[in-house]
Amino acid sequence: MRMLLAGIMIVLATAIHAHQAPSGFTYDPFCCNGDGENGDCQRIASKTVHPSQGGYEVTLLPGDHRLATRRHVFSIPQSEVKKSPDGAYHLCLFPNEDTVRCFYAPPVGF
View 1 (cartoon, rainbow, N blue to C red):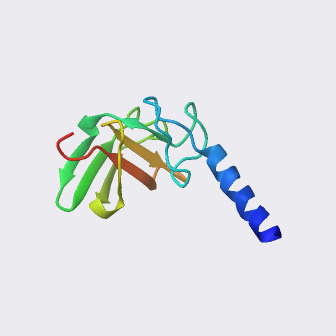
View 2 (cartoon, rainbow, N blue to C red):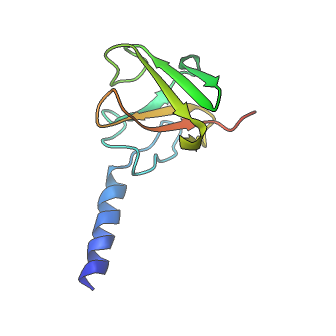
């Protein structure tokens, strides 16, 4: 019984930290920390994203993501891309601006 209660508490605590994108979908709890004002997930402009062989290349400059303080180039394999339900790109950086935790992309042809 204790194990069941502990598991429920962990799930609830994790879900509390998930926040929503401006369009209303909720980021996966694994991906986000914080909230819409200071969280590590946010929508990024499509101009920062370029399809590459086997995935995407994301180039961020300061201002492209609230956590980016310098230029970053991230290569994200297709196997790690999450489906974006709102047709926009979203990027979650955690535990710092150098680490992609999750990347959401619209389905091809959206």
